[in-house]
Amino acid sequence: MFYKEKGFYISLICGIVCLVAFGAICMNVFSDSGKDQGNIPVAQETPMPTAPAEAAVTQEPQTEEATTDNVKSEVKKKTPAPTPKAKTTMKKVSAEDRLHFDQETGLLWPVEGDILIEYSADKVVFFPTLSQFKTNPALIIGSKVGEDVKASAAGIVKRIEKNDETGTTVTMAIGDDFKVIYGQLKDVTVSKGDEVSEGQVIGKIAKPTKYYSVEGANLYYQVKQKGETINPLVLLR
Image (tube, rainbow, N blue to C red; front, side, top):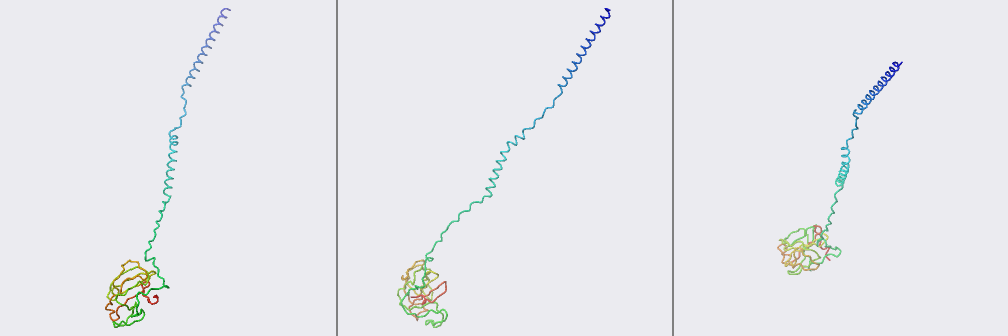
């Protein structure tokens, strides 16, 4: 009986020891397994690169600035340059442009005398000295040597010249494209460019040229309008 009980307790103790050993082994196994799981590398989330974003952030103001510069540049290109103001030039009015000849008032007789040869542009008339007939573009007015010759109208002396037929000759512009020509003069008192008033003495009657020796002392008197001769008698008052 004792041995049976002793054997029972021995078996019980052996069973307990086995259980404890088995439990210890299991604990070691689970412990190792936990350690292995703790050693498994955990995949870490790779952070997104921030450099491009920063670059984009920093470049954005530059892009806006560049765009603004481009817009300004385009505006400058498209904006037309201001048109320079045209200079206002005042046309200088010459003394001749201020002249006006009143045809109704007419012309003053330059000397007192008879008409020796009439004006005749359309038909021929006789010239005693030349002993021939020809047209006459002027009046040949008889006078005396040394007689004063007066300006028939206010005007400007355009030319003073000498030629064989009319001797010393003065041409004056009197306005509105009219000109008066005085020939067979001496002691001329005016010069080219002078402004002359109506009735002013411009010279004296000279000895006649060889073309008018038979006619005697005279004034060669011619009137032109726009370069064409006209009859002075139409305008003389």
